[in-house]
Image 1 (cartoon, rainbow, N blue to C red):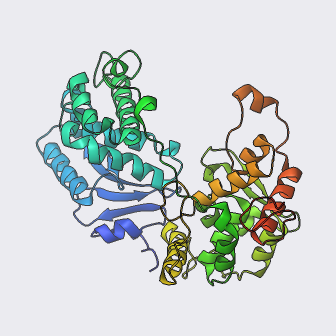
Image 2: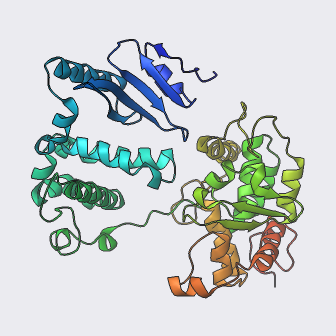
Image 3: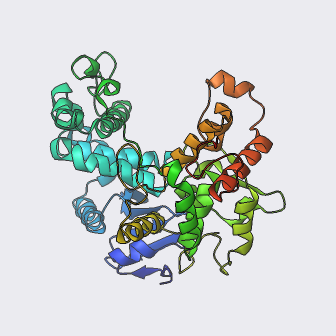
Length: 421
């Protein structure tokens, strides 16, 4: 469905707000000056243009992602009433620090820090963690009244069972409260601070966290799995094949565009904004990966290499579904299937990176080179600063050998990945 074209005045609806993409201001028919402002970068804000003491002013009512249309419209109506009573809603808004709740602080913090988030998914995950665990206990509290006991009441129930989530939650609460302090909405020490504060009453995450490994494909099953994957059709199957050959994350492959690929140089350059570490990553393409790119059809109007049926980006679930169906096919013929050697759980796409890492270690490839292939940070900051090469040629040879192993072409190896006598 094409995005609605903003007009000068209309009744704003939730659907209109969700689909609006063209930059500009669309005024609501309520005639309260309430409108949706779509900025050139795609962010959307609710704004009220209102005349106060003879001067036209704009009052921000929040980011359209974080604030509901109903709440923004209600605040605009309240501002209109305040003006009719001869008062200044903008001035009163700035004089409300004592009544700012933690929920309000989160809204304002996220609006201020939008540019720092890697993508919209990261922003939503950030908020979702707070909504699930912090808001029930802190949401309606005055942000200036929150103390260590309040933070502990939120963290303690999940600290040992969901340590990684709890640790992230603590850090996010700390950031919001730091922001509130700078905005003079609270004073004193940050009760969510770890060092010298919560570290004295909670066990260190590193001591209690249970490492969560993605179920990986066993090297002994790799060739059989690879043959089964090559027999499957569809964009999702080809993207999974490409991800395996390049040891890339599925998200990097799903977001891959033709503009990032140089087939003549057999090189894929993933821009920094799409990488987990925030650094550009050069991926040398082995011949098998190039062959996939040369054979895959292109969709007119879609920038993506591995596109969804309507030309958009493939979903994460579509790639996971390929592996799930492969596992189900194995079970139907009475086999155990493609499972992790330690947990016994079915292998998942991200686990293929571990499979590659195991293979590289077994073959004696340099640790630094293997970690570079996975786009991991290797060595200290100083070491990385002095390292002037990303070993692109040697990594290409390594990935070519990896592809040969998957196809059963590697020399001196038995089908289970061990060396032949």
